[in-house]
Image 1 (cartoon, one colour):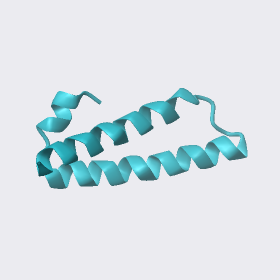
Image 2 (spheres, helix red, strand yellow):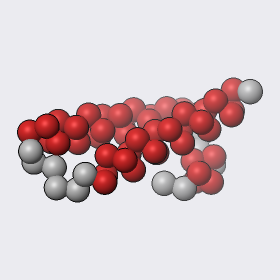
Image 3 (cartoon, helix red, strand yellow):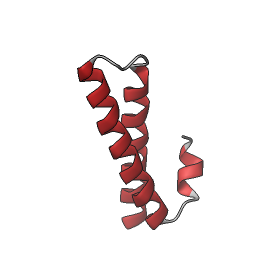
Length: 62
């Protein structure tokens, strides 16, 4: 997900997107530990997207 796309979203949209990504990260971690996850690079992408959202939410508060 591109940062400029995230900056165009509202704060409520960012929070809802973050909760979706956290849930998806949980599911991917569960699949990883049960041995069903084939694409492990997806974990890194999801964590980076969550970090981008957190950064943008912090920027908006200031």
